[in-house]
Length: 369
Ligand SMILES: NC(=O)c1ccc[n+]([C@@H]2O[C@H](COP(=O)([O-])OP(=O)(O)OC[C@H]3O[C@@H](n4cnc5c(N)ncnc54)[C@H](O)[C@@H]3O)[C@@H](O)[C@H]2O)c1
Image (tube, rainbow, N blue to C red; front, side, top):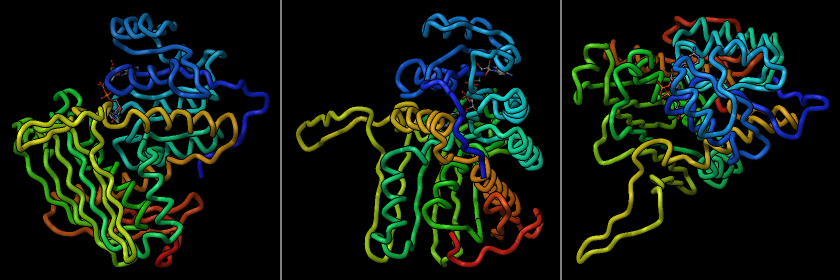
């Protein structure tokens, strides 16, 4: 389990430096600079000095060009790692070794072994480590998780999730993203485990339709995943990179006693009516869809560091979602379903994929989660 020990004598507000100020890092920096309770933005860093200096000016904090200088700053308690995914592992390990509690965007790495080595290094360093699986902090998803756990939904039979970008991120981002299954599906796979329990089979299909860049990179821009859960329940996830109508994130669970549906929350509440038609706004991207979750995940991180609250989006959960993403990628390229075997370790559940990702542990009994 990720460490969540309280820091003796810690300041009431966590002083956080942000590494990487692109789409996600800038949002985290803005939240830390006043919106997220218990947090304070200490400084910002980016390899792009112009971008970094601009964000620093906008938010009234120092710009630090060299990320190493952030890690050696005694006035910084923690860092947010929001750089491109391939650099997360190295920066997270360096931060942990420097004694900085670390909030790392997903995925932890693009490589399975490096993800594992990163988590082990962080465990040894003993800092709090949280991953940007923001839906674990969204009030809607949290409420459904709690009502499933309390038994109100009965036995969960069916899971359905959609996560679709309105337009594809730039090719420069896609190249280092890890591809659809590790970059996008990972979020829904994490929710699927959280709500439904462990997954025993993934069957994925993908297509590259909107831009030749996807086929050139061996990636897909549209994917459908069919999941079989250990309980016998089934699930369907659809992910897309270019749903022209807008950004969509919705999730549904059907149980024996009730069902829950989280729709695509609009960015404002106006319903515009004309004769025979009514329309509501559709979010254009993740920043419009999840303003609350992105703030709360930072508040949760601060609470884990300052108050010893358990980490709700742990590195080990992110590793499980990554392993299921790997299974989906393998299924998609092989054109067949892929078995996933959950097994218990000292840190929680891990997955063996088609018998390949073996490791120490024992089989998780059905319904153990
Ligand atoms: N949780 C979510 O909903 C969500 C949404 C979008 C992106 N992300 C994740 O956030 C991360 C960043 O994505 P993005 O879309 O913001 O990328 P981006 O390309 O918009 O921004 C990355 C920034 O990092 C800077 N950078 C690169 N290497 C650096 C280094 N070593 N040190 C400091 N700065 C560095 C770049 O100059 C750039 O400004 C990715 O890992 C992505 O998967 C998560």
